[in-house]
Each structure stands twice: as structure tokens, then as C-alpha cells.
Length: 595
Ligand SMILES: Nc1ncnc2c1ncn2[C@@H]1O[C@H](COP(=O)(O)OP(=O)(O)OP(=O)(O)O)[C@@H](O)[C@H]1O
Image (cartoon, rainbow, N blue to C red; front, side, top):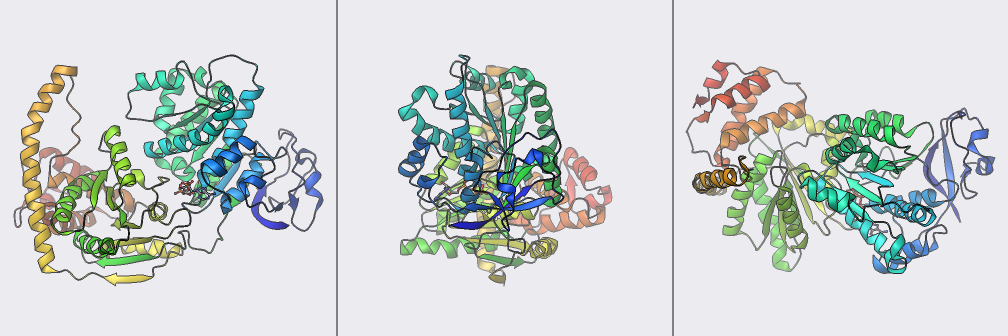
């Protein structure tokens, strides 16, 4: 049976540079045109986009072009029988002898199996390339997969290792070797693991670390033919754009990358335009959802809770956690991620929430993860959360994208996300692989701008609630926060001198201090910086002065700041405030004392 594929294949006027490639007989132009057997290079089309039709194949075992070792591994080893929607559209296309090697841009909702959609064809491509190879050189990366976070890079590596292991069982010498390189890991050890004796065929990398290796020895990548951007829109966004451009340039200098694959749940039009430049004139474009559909998953009902002030989020969060975790009493799982705005907030509220939960909730294991922690601690925290039955992960955006934790039941977002895309990806940590989940965002009146942005993107809420503060709960949280802060400060002071001493003796360098002291001012400053970045200079100095005052008055007490005491700011913090928010000395003195 043929079904109408939602594939748009960009087929522009053909230039002589385009390699002759025939579309498979299975792919034909909508309306029965004769494109199917015609080499692209000999034709010229006025239309930019054609819709293609393909035979419907549901199960991995029925995939004509899938290597039998990989097929049996995916079915018997991984336990997947049928392909997900995006896999049905991408895998046959990338495996078909006529269309393999095509550049692709793929957009499908979170948790729908995009990783396997690119990883299966890549492992097969690399495996076949190993089989064909007559060289006896040390394996070096044929495919490079770039991911924006370390956690995601490791996850993709693990999934690729799993596929490759099914080849290894029957054909050990030809199984692709997969490795990952990420920031925050000792480079010397990593280098010898990845590029040493055994080498690797598939490399998963975060951008900065990849660039390090590319710069120090470009020849390591002379056999690289395939490049993948997972979370492509994030990689092409401002934060990574420079690294990605440098990677592109460095790779071009040493090799000819023949295939570029880009995957994400969100692709903003401006990013799509940048992507198009790399993908060239002819590429496969797959979008599994309709344009007027909500970009979040239908399986995830979303709720919004409104609060008055910008620092009022913690009390409703604790109420919600208490309410939802009651499910545990009925034997149901409760596994939630709470996204905070900054790493500082994560550390601060992790302490407070751990203490609140210890006192009053059902047994929930609380963990924290943010870029402020060492890589080892990050991995440990994620592992701990993955293994927990009833767990709570207090997180920054390091796990907002791509990270796949099975059976997350709830996602909570404290405040506005950096942008709508980030909101969508955070929500997508639940409701994965066909499971259900729920998501809640807590927004203050000042964050109405974000709510408007969400609505513009067709994101709707099943419940819109206003939180009414409960004075008893508020006082309880404030008391716990103050006690937590005092305890942390005592521990910090006790430990920091000893740590300095030890570290200086060992390496002559000051230590990396992970657990920040419970300095309320720097947490508030980080929050202000976050909003300045999010609002992208839409507010002026008067707006930011007001915002900072509101943050201090509303969040301060629940961060453990003593009630009624003015904020103490160091000279450095004052200069940051003056620089980033352009506050005057007069503004600052109205709520703070200079240390
Ligand atoms: N064919 C399949 N059948 C059942 N489960 C699958 C299938 N393919 C993948 N999965 C599972 O679905 C989950 C989500 O997959 P994956 O992490 O690749 O999603 P994604 O689309 O990349 O999400 P995100 O946009 O958040 O990165 C994983 O646990 C994966 O093992």
C-alpha cells in the first residue's frame, strides 16, 4: 500500500555540481509524475518543493534495505518492533540505495525516536564503509555527531554503542567503534581513549571539545564524511553559532563532508534559513506535525499557575509537589523534573527543597543538575534520577533538550523559559515514547510577555490557575530556607579554607568549588541576568531596577535572606549591576548596602 508521505524534498533547478542520483522507484511525485526514475541531475524544476510518496513500511523487520544484523538487534535486543512516525519517514529514505547519503533536515516532536532515525542509517553506513575499506589504518571518525550538551552526547553514544553491539556479536572486526568527547573531562585521558589504539568510527561530541581536537590535529578527521547536528536549531543559534562555523571551516580544510543531517523538535524559520545554507540546494525535509498544530506533544496536558511577583514561584511549586506526590500513596510513580532559571537557583532551591521534602513529603529522592557542577557529579545525579522510582530532579537547562529519562511523569517550570523553543523541549522530557505525562509552568504577572509568546505558537493550557498564598506554608518555607542557608554558610566557611589549602598543595591552583555559598545577592544577580538575556534588552535601567527590587523582596526571604534585612552587595556585584542593568548608584542604595 502506498501512502502519502509528509516528506518535502527540496528539488531546485539542478546545477551541474549536483551529483547524479536517482530517486528510488518507491518514491514518486504526488499525482503520479515520472520523477521516480529520473536522475535529478538531468532535470530542471521550477518548483522548489515536491511531495514524495513512499510505500508504507511499519516494522523494522520489513525494511528492505536494513542490514539483517542491525534489524535483529533493534527488534530482539532493543525490543522495538514498529517504527515511530519519524523513523518511518527517515530511515527508508536514508537507507535506500538511490537516496542514501542525502542531506536532511528533520523536525518531529520531542520523544518520538529521532535518535534512532539518524543512528540506524549512520551505523549501517559506517559498517558498510568498514566492510569496503581496504586500508589498515587506525579507525578514525567517519561520522561526527554534534550535540549541545554533555549528557545528550553520552546518551547518543550509548544508543549507538547498543546498535553497533548487535553487529559485533557476529562480525566483531567490522562493528563500528563509537566514542564521545565532551567538555569538562580530562583531555589527555579522553584523547587516548578516543583517538588512541582502538580509535573510533563514530564520534559524538559537544561543539567546544570537538573544536579543540579539530584545531590541535585536523588530520584526525580526514576520513569524516557524515556530520549530524542533533538539536540543530540550538546548535545554529547564537550561543553555538561561532563554534559551529569554526567546526565547519576546520572540517572543510581537511575533508569532504558528503552528508549533513539535522534533527530537532523545533526549527525556527530564521534557523531554517541558516540550516539551508549548510544543507545545500537539495535536501530532504521532513516535518511530522502540521503547521497549525501545537508544537508540544498531545500526550502532555499543560497547566499554567499565575503568581503575583517574580520571586513568588517556590511556594506554589512546593504545593504542587505535595499535591502530585500524593500519587505515591496509591502506588503510582512520581518522577519529576523542575526546571529553574539559573544554576545558582538550582543549587539554592535544591537545598531548600531537599529539607522541605525531608520534613513533610513522601519518600522522594531529590537530586540536582546544572552546569555549575563537575561532569562526574552531573552524570552521577542523572544516573541517580534515572534509577529512582520516585525522584525529583532540580535542573537547569543542561537537561532541557534531548535527554531521555524513561517514565518522567511531570515537568515543572519555574518562571519563563529562555524562549518558546526551550519551553517546548523542557515539556518534552515527559510524555516520551508514547507514554503520558503532565507539565506545569509557574509565571508571574511580569512574565505575561512569555505567555503571549506561547499562545502565538498555538500552545494551550488545560488549566489556568491563580495561586493564592498560604501564610502557614509560606512561613514554613521561609524558616526552612533560612535554616538551610545558615547551615550551608557554616559548612562553606568550614570547608573552603581546607579546600584552598589542599588544592594549592596538589596543583598550585585554586579549587573548583561546586557547592556555592548561600550568597543570596549572587543568586538574585544571576536571576536578573537571566531576565536581561531573555528580554533581550526590551527593558531599560528603570525596568531592571524595579525588577531587581521585586526579585529581592519576593524571592529573597524564600532563598533564606533574613526578613527585613537589607541586601548586602560587594563592590564587584555593584559594578555588575551597574554594567548589566545600568542601575545608578542611587537606585542601588535604595535597597542594598555596599560591603
Ligand atoms: N520504534 C520505537 N518504538 C518504541 N520506542 C522507541 C522507538 N524508537 C525510539 N524509542 C524510544 O523512545 C524514546 C525517545 O526517543 P528519542 O530520545 O530518540 O526521542 P527524540 O525524538 O530524539 O526526543 P527529543 O526531541 O526530546 O530529543 C527513547 O526512550 C527511545 O528508546
